[in-house]
Amino acid sequence: MFTGIIEEIGVIRKINKTSMSANFLIESNLVIKDLKKGESLSVNGICLTVTTITKNLISVDVMNETIKRTNFSVLKENSKINLERAMKLNSRLGGHIVSGHVDGTGTIISIKKESIAIWYEIKTNSKIMQYIIEKGSIAIDGISLTVAKVNKNSFSVSIIPHTISQTILHFKKIGSQVNIENDLISKYIEKLISPEKKISKKFLLENGFY
Image (cartoon, rainbow, N blue to C red; front, side, top):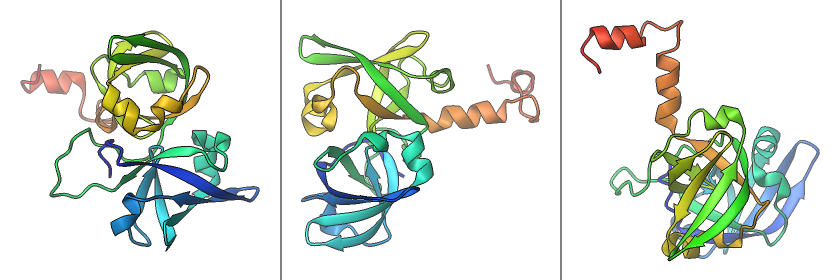
C-alpha cells in the first residue's frame, strides 16, 4: 500500500524483455537505502516486487498483464520514473490510499499554465471515467492528486510547483501516456450497492443513511 507521495525520480538503466515479461534495472539514490529484497516498490504507480539490490540498482520483474494494462510498454532505457516505498503504519498518510494496482492508462491532451499552477487534461476510457468525480482523489503515475474538473471523456488536475519539481510530470508532453489508478473506495462502494448484493440504496435509506 502507498500514499501517492513520490519520494524520488529514478532512472531505468536496463530493460530485459521476453515475449511475455520484462525485467527492469532501476537506478536509485534515496529509496534504495532501506529497501529489502521481496519488498514492494511503486514504479510509476505500479506495485512491483524487488527481486535484487546491487549498489544503487534495483531489479524488478514485470509480468505481461502489467505491461498490457500500463504505460510500461512505452518506457525505454534512461526513462525517468516515479518511485515510492510502501507506506509504514506509523507514518502520516499525506496523499490517499494507493494500492499500486493500475486500472489503465490515459493520454495528456492539454497542458496549460495558470499563475504558479499547471493544468493537465487527461483523456481516458469510460470504464475509468465512471469512478472519477470532481474533488475526488486519483493516482497519476503513482502521484496522489485531486481531480479539479470532469468532462465526458476527460478530467483535469491542477498541479503545484512542488509536485511538478519532485515527479516526472515536468517531463510529460501533450500525447504522453500516464498510468491511472482510481480511488479504491469508489470501486468497493459500487460493488457493495450492486443489484445482486443485499446492501442497496433502498437498504441504506431505510436504515438512516442519507
